[in-house]
Length: 314
Image (cartoon, rainbow, N blue to C red):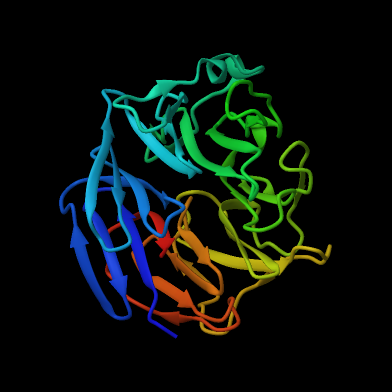
């Protein structure tokens, strides 16, 4: 098997290209976030908060569009790229010279109840702004799901023309992920446990059986399983990775076989990535773990990375 390439974007020091035990840096000293597949073997991501880039499979970089808005995350669905902002707006890029605002997202039912997540740390209130945290589309591309923090998961079945609320916003969703081949199956990492939908995100059940704590921060589908990261809170000194079969109601169990029982800090939104049988995750201290056999065994890859914003397996 060829050695897979893993891309790791960081909050303040660029993009790292990891192959085996080697790593190469691009966009040093710049924030990179929103790292996602472009659907063509390459990647899209946001540099400096305002520029949407594409990285081709051969590593060639190109700027797609820039904006005065604070861009937060992106996803490609066919030839269209959807971009979320730090003030919870949604934009669409279809190959023109500008980003089109999806006005219907601004008036989705319940939007007036959305709020920014925060916590009191050392007497100071800290936390991210009210914004789009993650996005996904079902494997057939017919359903768009946008995770707002804190605003639930608005859903569109018409390419973004109309939007409808789904999960209770107080579940505090941190990550949403669609199954790569089953259009009805979607998972969400919420502060109350693992959310699962079997109707393309229209309705949700939330479970925490087997977790040591209910605060879930990242989620992905790996083979026939769902994998989720859990901790006591966003600033926890340790976390853990759990999994269960998607078609069984058994409780979640810790992932072992090379992964430590406790990760260093949480594994945050977008920091579990899967492509076919290959999976990679990065914890809060910048240590990457990889599996090439659908999560049956894991090994530590590189470490001492800056704090990761997203991970992508190419």
